[in-house]
Length: 153
Image (cartoon, rainbow, N blue to C red; front, side, top):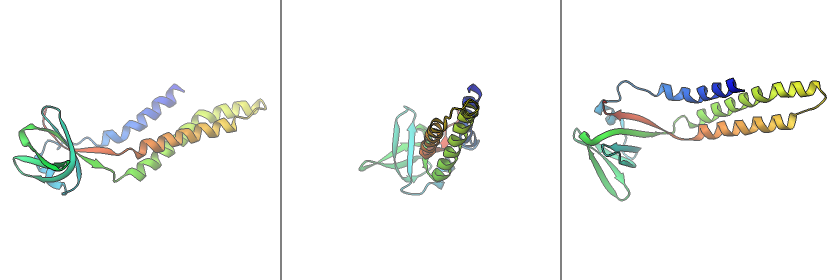
């Protein structure tokens, strides 16, 4: 049981490993943003601004916050992230598949043992499997942020 839990946690962390980029400290990465794209800017005081992207220059990045436009000087920008929802369906399917696999891995040995003794845990097995599939589906549906700029530390 402990090994199954550890394996599941490892599988859930794998997508995060691939998102690390070595060129995140390049201000030119911000030129790939499209006007209206939802972004998050964190400044040097750790204040987070969220809203649609407006523009970027060599001196600052501008976004729409509420009804006004906010500009953050380049020297004060710590991180810029973009809302990444392009793989949400794929992530939901992977999460559901991992949940089904985990549910079967946990309950199948118990079902085999109990069926040898004349008992059946089919209902419990189905409930656990469906519950874990739903949890995986929910985790996969969560939108993520992809960091496209981060200052050098």
